[in-house]
Image (cartoon, rainbow, N blue to C red; front, side, top):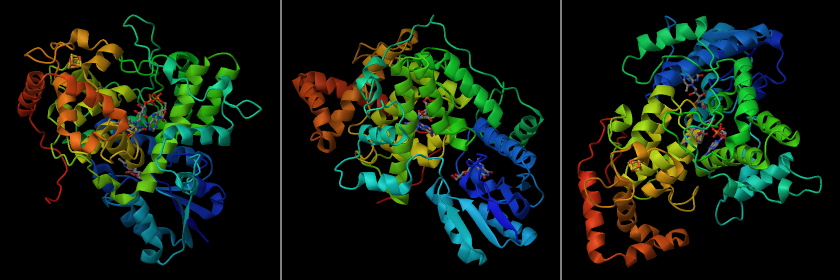
Length: 519
Ligand code: FAD
Ligand code: DLZ
Ligand code: SF4
């Protein structure tokens, strides 16, 4: 009478829905390190080591709680290759009567789960992932009868549903839903910044690091100076440190970028939330409690809660709503691969060198670095949105398709033509100069448009709009950009476009990128 419960690498939560009513005496939990998952993108080595170590620690925690865990390691002699292959072998070992599993986080794996019942002739129950606040059905119901998807309205629904930062009379705390206007301050280099928490590698993590070094010599990314939490207890410690020391400034400096400071006042909790070590709703409630106790201002608490119950849930909703073909969308029809400096960090453009260098070092960059530096540049040069998505999937600790795809292809690259964002997120150097100290350390001049010292973002920005006029001109949110462009002298327009063309001609394309069918 055995039930087999596969637990996937992003389901590392003790109360995952598949386990909620299971009897530990009659259950085998199956956890599988498999080659397919480690190779479906060229993961940063730190990301691989994080996931495998967190999985191994989670198996230990489940065993300590009384579960029987059958754990398949990547270096087992049988060479585990896929979830389905390993499930077949586990069925032979345990002869289960049924299989219970929590739904997968992406289309590719969900299709596998859905094939199992027919393939193995055993009942397979696929359960909703209740770690998310909005189920697929709720998101679909919210979308119905709407012309466009605006995150802000979805977010208000989640506030009402959870009661987070609501007054007893059902109004938003502080009389406003959103305090973003207070959250755009540039930071100073000499401001006190909280120290990132550090969790040194234990024996399990050291084993995994050695495994990754040995089995994946072709992959990039630093494994040095390990500092990541790999257990729920340590992730909760990281959460507490953020709440105590960084949340109080999170809102103010949410968009700021400072040389050498990779963490700023951000939480750095997304890898732990996305793999299941932390519960997003519990975290949001902790944030609210700090506000109610007078420990953090409202703009910081609201700003953070909006990211977690607003943006994160909205992105997931869009991913499942848009379907498995979403990944193919390419609104601008662009084909260029990313330049090779996305893998080396070797460029004179300080903002890109800093954001990319930090990414390969820590597998982390904060939202504005991802959106307004690496994403902005990729969109301006006309990179293929799929190539951009694959790079983000490769490099960040928190990358899983359900969240990376709508953020990259949708929000950052406008590859869906406006499903996620109402306009392309592009800027000239002025934005980066305002929000960072990068430009002061750069060989380029953020104020010049033309000439050898002119910042490339400036000519690329205007060239992007000129080049895509037929696709964008009717968008009311960018109408003013065209009005300004049309006021430039014809000679200036020509010189700006020639400057951009010269820059683009000098850019290489990395060997890594998607193969798309021609035509
Ligand atoms: P904080 O700044 O401390 O924010 C708090 C939390 O809010 C995050 O931990 C995260 O859980 C949530 N959050 C904030 N913004 C978003 C968002 N847009 N979508 C989903 N969750 C959000 N986030 C991922 O989790 N995985 C990704 O692969 C990912 N790829 C991105 C790619 C691009 C191009 C962009 C622009 C954003 C991407 N994001 C992604 C969103 C965001 O950048 C990260 O969640 C954030 O930088 C993680 O760092 P943090 O934990 O310090 O976040
Ligand atoms: C990302 C990842 C990696 C690198 N390796 C594994 C693995 O070996 N075993 C596993 O169960 N999960 C892994 N994961 C996470 C999965 O890719 C993730 O669970 C699926 O994408 C489903 O969302
Ligand atoms: Fe980046 Fe331009 Fe500023 Fe240099 S001048 S850091 S390239 S925005």
